[in-house]
Length: 308
Image (cartoon, rainbow, N blue to C red; front, side):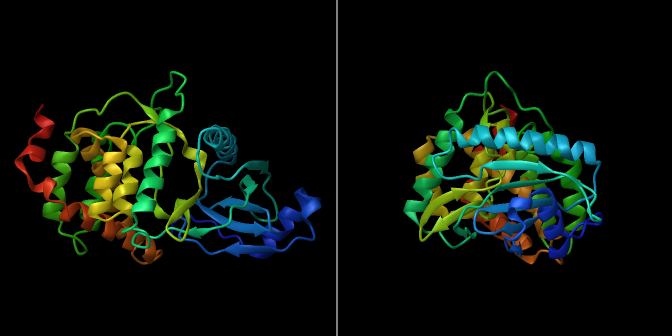
């Protein structure tokens, strides 16, 4: 999927796990096939998973990032109304794999899909309950600490130019540019609140029509209060989006900024993963279609919203 991608097979993963965690040396280790783009994931026995970063990076920086992820996951556990993995350990490189890696608990469930629960009132309610609980968590005075998704929409301008260029043969770029011009000009929706930060289908577990688990909590942090609203565009049809929005009492600005973050994320998925991860590319297509088809984004009220 990436030019700098690292490759790790079950044999290497098994040796690393057995060496550093001898208590699991007799447990089965198998690669889990996912749509994930950040980690290679291996299940250890029945209760744990090992996560190996996929992209080449400085080992010291990765160790620091994994330690921060562990803290964020524990903070998420304290406020999340659904089960979420518990961090277990940060492990060392070895046997040809050059980076630190992590272990966390395994959660059972089926990964959500863009259309699998799109028509479910129950799922929309669960999703709103999740975001409501995360927003209620204490930021402890912290603000958004990064760039890109979750901060100032204009920080994505350079990336969006790359996406427009790469999408020329895939998407209606002229319309996309016009829509982004309005999105990027939206004013702030208010002070930062706690956000999961990546509420895509692959990070949510379902059973039937109910949400039963939340994955990848290492990015739990203060950010734009609109950021986690991307879930509505990735996962819900129009009627369920209305119900979801009403549950969270989102005003126009907050709702539009949520669509803007979903748009920014989806634009990168379509072209970048077209060949290497078709289901992620398809997620981007589905999300953009939902935004395109929403009549509000063709109204003068929305088009003029950034001028306030």
